Image 1 (cartoon, rainbow, N blue to C red):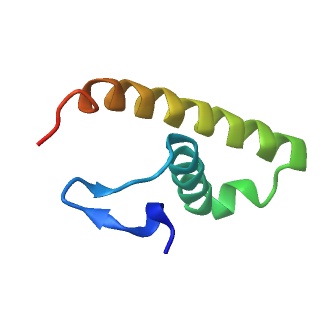
Image 2: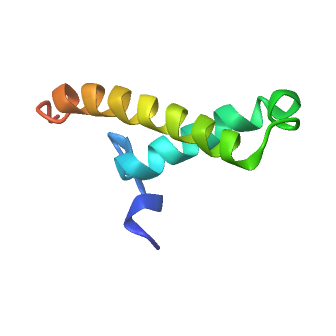
Image 3: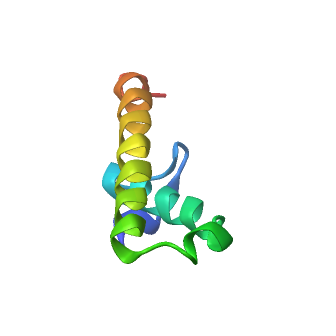
Length: 70
């Protein structure tokens, strides 16, 4: 079993990049009607915008959370 698939008392261990990607894909999947009519390059721009925003939030949250161990 992959180490990222195992839950411990802190929750699931997932790479920040993978988490940002998953959250971005979730956001885009909720926008099906809006993204249906846009060009491929516009979709990529939208993906990178959401991905970068998610990475900043994850970095800010994990910077402080990683110093606390139970």
